[in-house]
Length: 480
Image (tube, rainbow, N blue to C red; front, side, top):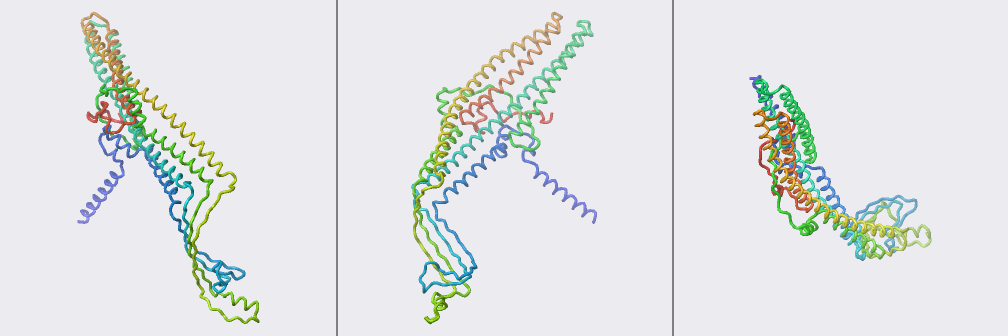
């Protein structure tokens, strides 16, 4: 029974350790495969770029809270104790009949200050802080779109290597079959041994290319993990064949208007400009007076206070005034208003105004620069998408021709009407064209996504609209 109890306890411990291990492993590492949509969703949750942008939004929200605080009453509690050489009178500025004197003095209370009017100085500071929050939130939206694009582009780049590897493996099988046929022809005296050597040499080149492609795929997968914010082993990707489907291009002026209206980074620049304008207004208003109201209540106390009459009796004992009995503690309160006129501050306000004017001009130039960059990005993305579509059309024709040439050369070689060199040249031409076609088809999807990014409308749910499918079969293993 003791052994059974120990075995049961050991199983429980092992089960607990296994559970904790699974809990500690990132969710992405527990999955067997990753679709593009899952990769994008993981990146949106774990990307350090987005986490930093979110922290910036929170920091600016804190700054906005700080800027808003002066419009509310400011209440402070205070307490203190002092030991003096000579008796100190308290409460201050009270009639002699209420005045008390003692070397030790305790005091405590509350003080309230309220900004009544400052000609909009605080108001514009608050508006500027709110605009900065909106700018940070818009920047966060743009960062999300950039992360979606980076992950999709890197994911498709990894699948491009998969396309090339599959094409090379197909060619390898074809060359392997050609090696066997050539060997049979050599054995039958219908071909020379040099022909078999040439085929084997071409097969070795394909094997070398496969090694390079697999290394490139590993590098692409590492880039994908970095773009996703994944610290660990990347699950197997889901392979989907490249497609050439792309939405019809709208007119360029319409797309430019859409980009100007949709780009969140341009919205962030507009909010930054508005913040700079409000900061300049606030700096200009800081030259004007401030009106404040205040109220306070205080409690004073001492160990053994003396009255004003007692002090007079000590100085002039001949007067013999009647003793005056006072409590040790006394309360006081006051209310009022103040007006502050700024006269001279060593140039602080002047410097603040000059800085605000320069920041506003800088924000104007930045916004204009961004508008020009948006127009350039839209035009560039349109041109790259059109070029990718044209390359696909041309390469599809080239691949069809290369397939026919290879088929013809293989038949002629089997009939003894040509040399092996022509067959190998046709094999190499077909492999090259198929590789270029695979890259061109992937580039169509990437260019379409780049156009959506330039227009400010790329989202995880729009990926399927560019021939980017979540379906398919597992791609090659990440560690191949």
